Image: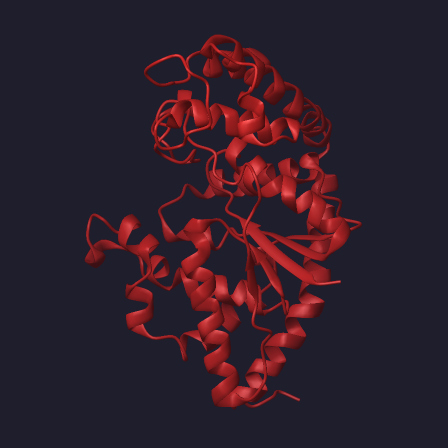
Length: 328
């Protein structure tokens, strides 16, 4: 059984793209793999956050993950900052990462558009902390989207370099790309990926949106010139996005879904209905869990203990390899 690790930031609201592209796959992975899932609150500090909102979103994100089907009795679910080994290993890994590597990270370039001088140092070193998140648990597989592929390659490079210099210490992980539904686009801007930080709320379907809201968003979804319903992401990005969503929600391929439609209206209506039914049990379970948040807090405490039992061993191995004196 391979060990798999993935994480999600507690920023913004979890949307349909997160659910179809990541979380639903995690629910499957927990039964087939030795699965570790982390709410990466330290990564959220790379940009300014309201402290009270960050705490609330961390708990809300955990509630949603459990509501979506993550079972703390099957997988290890924890909050990143609850396991102190993460920042400790990150510092050690920074001693083998280079400035040039981090400057090449495209996400840093995009998020520091206002200028590197004003960007937080944490935004620059964020990929190294991400590497620590992965390497601490000897993860063999890491589910990632294309936007995180570069960071995983850096993680692999750091692990290989550390092992070469100081002896075999880390497992070198492989990327696992999500299947259908991995890249859900904005309903109003089908050329842009659906995002928690998007400026077009009508284009983003939230997991906790009420059915009437979901129906309205799909009804107003941007389509394309003409009336043909075919899966053509280049020529018909709006229609292709709807077909991708409907296919992911019903377990079919987008091209297969297109058969039988010759108008956009029915496609929008059916997609909305499928998404509403897909998310209904998640919303209902979330409401039950939110009524007793202390139970989820207890789950996180148990998860942190399970995670730290593994992380502490890896950190001790890395400390010894690089030459740090043991306290014992």
